[in-house]
Length: 274
Length: 329
Image 1: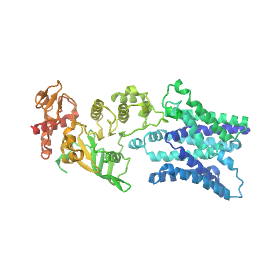
Image 2: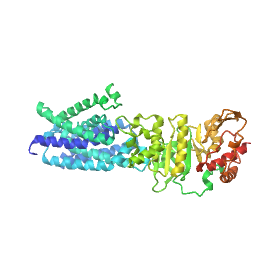
Image 3: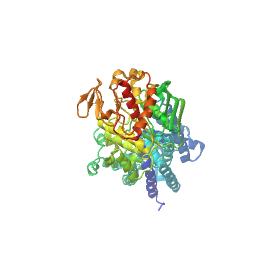
Image 4: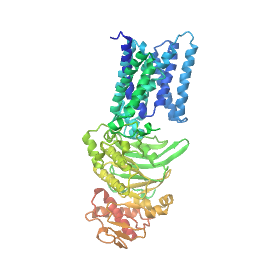
């Protein structure tokens, strides 16, 4: 069954979507979309480094993204720059430096588009093993820190007052994020990872009554987007990574309109009228 | 450091403080947010921090909680201290689906029964299924308080627990806090910028303005020169040191309006005597406070009638109130 490249692609996409759902919820709740962007752009730098040093790409991407994350946390604590400007600065610098480094390595033939937008159809068995093994590890750790991380998300002071160490769970969470970026890069590429994290989570919001429910629904919607996007790309011969994101976007739009009255929920009026 | 600083519970066997700040201060960006704060909260004691905006009340509380590390001085907490915290602000973004029930179990796992019991205590049980961001100001405060007490904390830290609550709700919440203190035996550190209602159950008021301006019992602080300077004389004159039963009101001119609407020159009569059956405590503390308020306490008899209710925790104040009343006469 795994011999078919398309089956492997679907499995890989589902694996990533399952992990991206809960993490994406936290990104949405904590308003960290730009932060995720920065880490994933830093992944390109990781790829360049791994080619230069000839070491495992996934591992290097994870290390570089983690280092970037820790740097960001430290800079933010100093509070010299607004975190928005800081993230913009680092995000695009990391992307640009990565591209420049790759350009310097003239001896390497690199599929740049594959890096930027993903190459899910080229996923092999080893990649699958990495996605499911790494993904399971990420989810396990997330489950372990779920309550303190959620408490620190709702109110860091309250969490700290009642015996939780917000900085520690924040750090663990950022490392998990770096891990997801490392394993998801092949599926959707560095430019679109954040989309796979955020869009299913945002779509899940209006269908959820609680944070845990929202995490599960985000995972399921992400899987739906992967399947729909891949079949769409097969049908219309479109690039697979972007197709998945377009499918996720369609799911988000569907999640917007009719459910409000059906589930008697309120609160999203802002996003329907700009 | 005068006798006014003696905590009201000094007559009792003091337990080790739950939390203590010693000459603690926090500086940020080369500026002192607050400096030289000494405070301690013991089990069963209510300490209230008051002061204008930006006077360092929340900062002091955060030092006590360990959220902020003091830049100078010391902050000590009892080992294994269980804390319930009501933060000043709680903004829940619309992206976050959060019901009251889930919010209650924010930092620890709780059973539905525990959640219900805690909400019941603060009169918010009907809100269990509500979304936190749809709560009104008063409802949110009740839920926050319920969440803080759900784990039977050793120390409750309440940062403006009555904000957004109307006057009668405010009194109900203060009553609740003082009842919880008795029932749970916890220490309470409370912050308020609202001086109109300072709870009489407060054992010690610490008035902050970047540093400790003055401290003492509520009635002593409301008359202290530093307090009057900080908040103006009108604040001192109009301040109502809240007592539990409003069977009469003290008018600004010193006369008394009773519950039935009649106005008399003073509140003489049966309800102004020392609380029956509390004589022991009354005399005890009355004599203690007679010294404590010996000087600088020309009370204008604007407050303090604590009669007819037999809460344990109010004994010390009953005594004090009676003594001050007599002073004024």
